[in-house]
Structures are given as structure tokens and as C-alpha cells.
Length: 69
Image 1 (cartoon, rainbow, N blue to C red):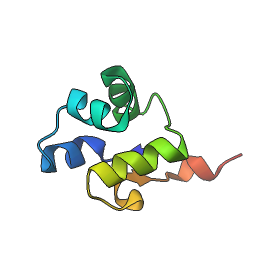
Image 2: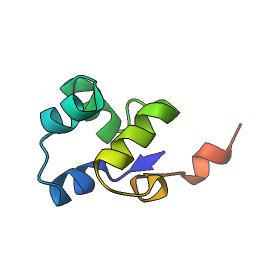
Image 3: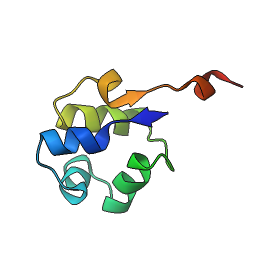
Image 4: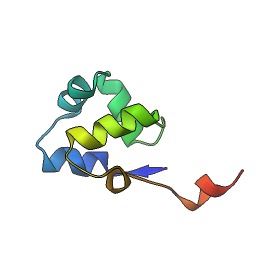
């Protein structure tokens, strides 16, 4: 799954630490999500999108490989 968290953070002038605090996780968690090493829960993904004033599908996008079983 791809994401545009870094872009959305920049639009809102948030650091990773700012976003992490707003959604209740560590900065390392935000970093791991941005780098694609960690896929967030649905609740966390929704929180990130809401805090960034974005639609969920503008922040998180499925890749072709996500459709493979």
C-alpha cells in the first residue's frame, strides 16, 4: 500500500512528531508508515486522514501487489 502522508504533513506544516501526537502514536510509527514498513490499522489510517483534512483514499492507495493473495 502506498501513502502520501509526507505530502499531507507538508500541506499542514506538521512534523512526524506533530502528526504522531495528534493521532496518539510514536514518531517512529509515523516514520514506519511513511516508508511502507508498517501498514496502519483502519482506525489509525482514518485518524491520520482526518487530522490532515484529507480523504482516506487521497492518503492511502492500494498497489497492484495488494490485490495478490
